Structures are given as C-alpha cells and as structure tokens.
Length: 342
Ligand code: ATP
Ligand code: MG
Ligand code: FE
Image 1 (tube, rainbow, N blue to C red):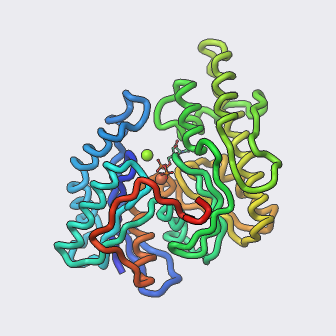
Image 2 (image 1 turned 90 degrees about the vertical axis):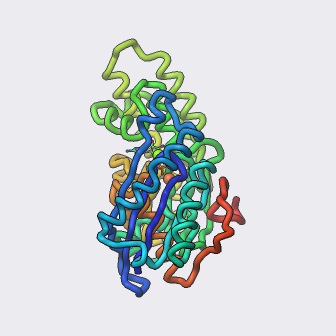
C-alpha cells in the first residue's frame, strides 16, 4: 500500500510518499519526503504570517508533488491514496493542501484522506518502529501540549492539556527575547549546551499538582523578566538562561508524564511534535519512563517537526482500516483529537 501525504498547515510545504505491507503490524518505508521550510518568507516578521504562508504553499506545492514522485520512482497511478492535512492549522494553507489532494484524487480516481495534523504527529512513531496500541502520548508542538491515550487511528482520550501556552511557543518566545533567531526551539537548544541549568530559578507551573494539565505562561513571563535584567553582551548569561529554561521545561514535562503514567499505566511513553526533537528533553523523558518501568519511544528527529511523511502515514493507517473521506470535506481550522475532552 502506497500513500502520498501533503502537509501545508503552517510554514512548511511538505510532500511525502510512504509504503507499507497490507497487514497492520509492520512499520512503513519512506519512499520520498520533501520539505520546503518557508524560513526566508517569514524571518523578517519574526513569526509566521498566514497570508504569506498560504501564497508560498500555492507557489511551491505542485513542484514538490512532482519532486516527491520522481524521488520515489513512482507515479500517481501507482498510489493507493492521497492524504492531506485537513486541519487544524492556518486555514489558507490547509485549503491549498486539501484542494490539491482532492484534485489529484479526483482526476486519478484514488481515495482522498483528510488527516488531522495532530494525528499525523501522534501516529508518526509507528512509521519507523513497532509500537502497539494503546500507548501514552506526550504531544509537544508549536501549538499544542497534551497528554493522550492513543487507542488507534481516530481514537484518542485526552488526559490533560495546557491551560495557556504551548511548549513550542514558549521556546520560540524565549528565543525571540534573547535574539537567538527563528525558529526558536533549535536555537534555544543549541545555546543551552554551554549553559548552567541551575543559574536561574524559574517557576514550574503545575509542578507536583494533581492531574495532567500544563501551564507555561508564568514561565514565559519569568524568562522575560530575567532576560530584561541580563547584562548586555553577556553570552554566558544567555546560555545559562536557556539551559535553566530548558531544565525547567524538562521538570514540568517529566512531572506531568509521571502523573499520567500513574493514572494510565502504559508500557510505552511516546513523545511527538516539534519539541520532541529536543535531545535534552528526550533524555529527561527517557529517565522518567524508565523509572516507571516504561520505554520512551520518539520519532527520528527529522520526523518530529512538520513533514509530509507523518501525514501520508496517518492516511495509510486509516486507509488500511477501510476509511477514506469524501470530496466535500471542509478544511477545519480547529480540530481537537478528543472532541469530548475539548
Ligand atoms: P502544531 O503541530 O501544534 O499544529 P506546529 O505544526 O507549528 O504546531 P511543529 O512543527 O510540530 O509545530 O513544531 C514546531 C515547534 O517545535 C516550534 O515551536 C519549534 O520551536 C519547536 N522545536 C523544534 N525543534 C525544537 C528543539 N530542538 N527544541 C525545542 N523545541 C523545538
Ligand atoms: Mg513550522
Ligand atoms: Fe505540527
């Protein structure tokens, strides 16, 4: 089974083709995975501008579809389905991806799959490793911070969520305050390498409170206040603040995951989403999982941030369960994984 996945929900235009045997257990194979990051388009604004993103997707997408097909050595006729992110995300971009996938599916008479972007992140580990359902998932990305039980495609129970900001957003804000550039996550991680994680005592919202919810706005404010007091041109102080910030995030994530594992014991803790690319946080979560007799599984770094392979894979998982979407699917700017909790 071979599926193309198109991702256009934020600022990466991405197309991938993945393949898997017909059974349900074996992992998949990535035949092509091309990503165009719209960094230059948005850099001077210090963040993603929705209208510019939508236009950039429109300009690039056809070329990326052709490139992915060429890299995979396949053509549209050989595909079993065409998937696109159907939401949640910036609506203009989602529309570009959905319309393209629908058109290709219609013309080539293939099933169309509208994939929830968060489900793409949630199932991405299963593309490269055998991980059985159900599993506990920490989803940490630019717009989300949630703990969920993943029962299968389309079946999620939410245990907790952030009551204010997402973790990725907090990394991006920290980078901006410290002039480290955009996108912020990798910059903070790099800068933190030479820093003292104990120099700044920052607040750990929700730490040691019952439940699995998160909060990051207090931490964000504390980082801003600390940043304003930093001596000018003190690179060591900046590194120390990044390291302290990262350690605080690690404390909070580990504490919340410990509660989740106590509430819903699971042999596997999965971490996914852009922030899962962070090696320090992966290490902290690995320690935590081991202490609870569980194993941490994370996608390869390259599949943590937005990509087409995770969308193709989620589409493939749904297709092999006999599911597909109709061409009157409407892009969804909001689309919670667990509609009951949301
Ligand atoms: P969502 O998936 O919630 O819709 P998104 O798609 O914009 O949001 P992702 O692409 O999944 O987000 O992740 C991007 C986020 O991950 C950004 O906030 C970025 O700063 C963060 N990130 C990326 N790499 C790292 C890293 N090494 N350390 C920390 N954060 C990182
Ligand atoms: Mg992005
Ligand atoms: Fe994402």
